[in-house]
Length: 365
Image (cartoon, rainbow, N blue to C red):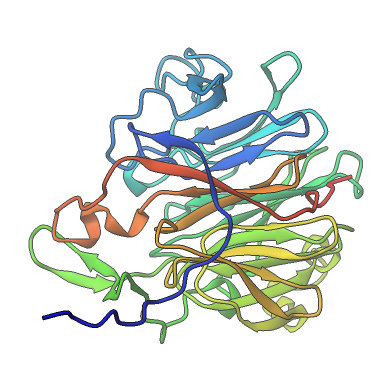
């Protein structure tokens, strides 16, 4: 008997494989203005020999060297502990965001930091550490964006994606090093209490080895900045909503934090996203981890799905290279043991994919 061929879901988008990861699970990714590719590996339970690496000649190597990646081998401010995000600013610097929070433990005092690495010399040029009223015991430093057109040395904007404490945008004056929390616990940086994520057809929630369960709850995570630096876009991880705010308002400390939410603009639903990135024309690219997709959000708010592929098993960080490709880390984050009663369902390799978008990244200067 000949069985009928039934219709199948349609997949699309010309994705190319750049690299396969057979070791630790990667999260952060960035492509420099010269095409160098950097990746980071936070310490979430895998064997992590180095938490920041460069992809050189199709091989990973510790960056800027193995010594800096040896946690606990000296000054915590001068060594990488557990890095969540790496961002090349297009001006010769790699910025490294160190959570100092292995396995989501409270951040190590003096270890949570933003580090500038000179890409020509391959050496650390500056380190920004944070006071205890900025990096709280619940803080998880997630991602960062820059604007060097304001202030004496520019400003950085960091998402705090705390799962048990308040989410926030942390603003850093790169000249003085002063940092402060904004939108602390505001509705726009807080997980959507009505959101129930579904990935690969199943509800995603914390499922512990002892059989107990709880909803997945992660605050402000994805972040992107407009090409002129005037608007910051962000989203909680457990939400489908997109928000923006004037960076001028974020920096203006005369606006009380309880009034700052009045400056927030709501852009509607864009899908549930992890990382985001902006191109030079102001379009935002974001993953949709519920639908194995990558979305493009035009400046007027229109949304186009540019890739829908079964290989996009949790699009984590995105970066646009000088070759006008969008690069994306796919890491099966939702298959980790903490979501499946202690059973690790991830299948190696994790992947670095890319898709042609014919646009350059938004400039930071």
